[in-house]
Image (cartoon, rainbow, N blue to C red; front, side, top):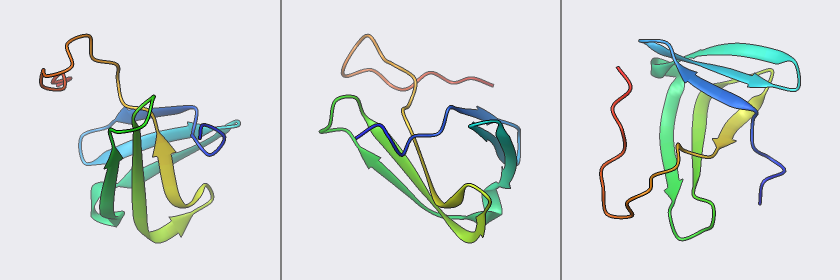
Length: 78
C-alpha cells in the first residue's frame, strides 16, 4: 500500500509542491479534480486525481500528517 506514495507534499498557497525520487512538481489546486481519502487503512492515504497529468502521473498518493487524537480535526498549517 505504500509503494505508490510520493516522498513529500507541501502547501504553497494556490498549489501543492510534490517531491518524489528527486523530481519536484508544483501542482496548482485548479488541476486537482478529485481528492480521495482512505481512513480505514493503516496508515491513512490521500489520493489526488489531476486534470492534466504531470511527470509524477495522473494520481498523487501520500500519507496525511499523523494525528494523535483519533477524533480530532486535522491541524491547520497556515
